[in-house]
Amino acid sequence: MDAAAKAAALLKEHRESIDRLDAILVFTLAERFKHTQGVGRLKAEHGLPPSDPTREARQIERLERLAEEARLDPEFAKKFLNFIISEVIRHHEKLQK
Image (cartoon, rainbow, N blue to C red; front, side):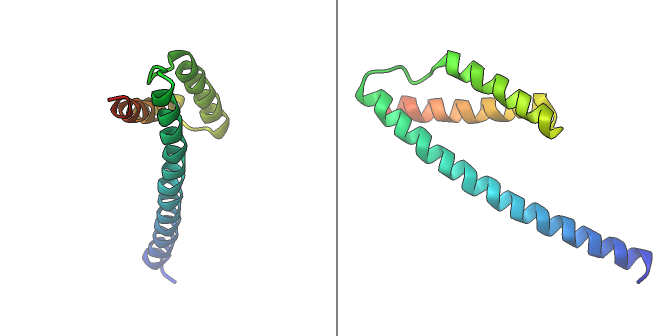
């Protein structure tokens, strides 16, 4: 097998792994949002605020630690979780209307 064919085979393997991981991410996010929707409904039913800044800060710190352990850029992990949190809060606010 020549170098180009070997590189093409390795590229194919990497892309297949990426595709599997993307599917895992999507299904994991869907499961997470099922739970946050339950939280949002409970908050709406009991007049609790849609946002919990103390918990959010703890979660961000926790995710940054996990990112460091996984050798993932903690700043990227923080941005990712902030995006998810903002979506969750948006959903919670909708439920309270």
